[in-house]
Image (tube, rainbow, N blue to C red; front, side):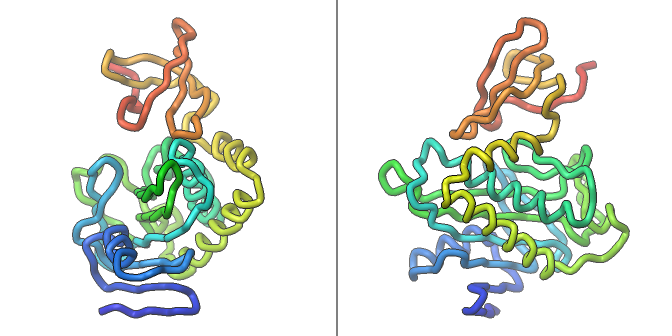
Length: 253
């Protein structure tokens, strides 16, 4: 069953495959206003980055997709959208707990555990982005997770209290559109700088792994394309990676 609130541009679903897929199918049928949100109590085919799945207990977490039309953003500079979305989630969770960080490219971590993931899908028109569907899965009230998930955590586990998912969505929407308005007014550099300050493992040497093996490095930059730039500790060599070309790691055995 679908409920539509036209004032808030909110489409509420009890269950769907994924909110991103639902939004994209809807876009093929009708013109949707910027800021339209699809939120579901349960996704039976939740999707993460690079084909990864997203598992969530029914009615426990915040699962939604947000539609924007980022005028003028070129495809090779699309990472600003990820920066805005990541910061909006971090700023939301900052109201409830400390130690929230952004793990490149856009996972949200509390200490060493993942509390939120996102999947951003952009439709292109020539060299520019036509629209962007920002899918977010935030662990809110779930307390038990599948054993195959390496390091999940929920807001309830952190705070010890049940949290209102609607309230969290309202905060996120407010935080997102404050940043989005800043971006539209030319504040790209300020947003990029804030993103860098809030990165997980920033300003310290840590272990990473690529196709050649383990190495220690420090994060130098994240490019407008979303590529991660690190500098190795041993040779001082700068290396640039796309998503999935480098993995965060503990010290090798």
